[in-house]
Amino acid sequence: MLIRHAKPSDVASHEITPRDVYLRRRDMIASTGLIAGSMALGWGGDANAALYQGPGVHTPLTNVVEGYRKLGEKDPVTPYEAASSYNNFYEFGTGKEDPAENSGPFKPRPWTVTVDGLCANGGVFDLDDFLKPHQLEERIYRLRCVEAWSMVIPWIGISLADVVNRFEPSGSAKYIQFETVERPEEMNGQRSRFILPWPYVEGLRLDEAMNPLAILAVGMYGEVLPNQNGAPLRLMVPWKYGFKNIKSIVRISFVEQRPKNTWAVVTPSEYGFYANVNPKVDHPRWSQRSERRIGDFLRRETLMFNGYEEEVSSLYADMNLKTNF
Ligand code: MTE
View 1 (tube, protein in one colour):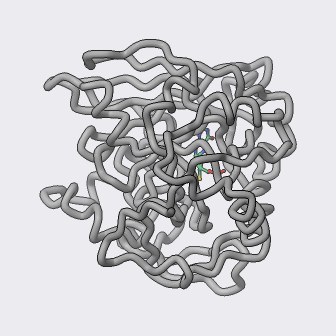
View 2: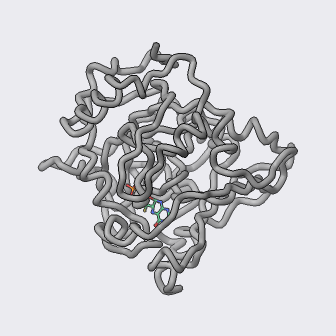
């Protein structure tokens, strides 16, 4: 049985036309009963750990339910090959092909996540223990990079709101901060301080983190995340520009002060903390009014909040989105 958290604005899943690659994988997974486990128990930790076969080997995820999904139009899913070969992950180099080419030696297992700061029950968790209490859901989301290209990707992840609730942030916690792992021996880009200051840092206001659209992803296209897409754990907040979606997270902190997110530190005139997709606020060097969907010939209009306005605009009701970019 598929458990569906429906919203009135949902597009029926049969209206979304996944490209053949995803269809083939999904059919294969569904026919072997790996997706759509009934009343699933979450990560299914040991089972998936046992299935994990190392980088470059496709590892199906079990016990996944269909989560909230809404597309503003009938967007076809981007082919897996494109989503896993055209990436931004500067820890492996600045070229789009670099992450796929250079992330082979990276080891996303074993993995620990530290939860600390202003919360009642933080700690250091093995990834399986971190994920175990949560339900894995598939969410098909648009990803809109600040560089004006976009994709549609079926992610598998856990609700960030559930994670926040579980660790019980105190009243003084106003933000949640995320940090990427630092492993220069496995991440060639981190051997240079001239690329970015490491570790990569991102953050959200706590009420943004509680929005039902926000997830921590562990997979895509029915399988464990490939290294180049941020294995084993990354953020996905689809109403924001892609750089908010920090990859390979090792630390989650509840903090009072607004986190100093990497791109806003490096180029504050071009990148801010909020990074909400906004076709009316241009990047200083290019327009944000339209985007190139990877695989399409013609550009398409960029939608306010990447098409998730109904779900998130109330978070910013009192804000000037031109100055808070
Ligand atoms: N996270 C880390 N740690 N390092 C990065 O360089 N790049 C960001 C984001 N997360 C980045 C990161 C940017 S700019 C984008 S657009 C998305 O990851 C790209 O995600 P994808 O490669 O899975 O499409």
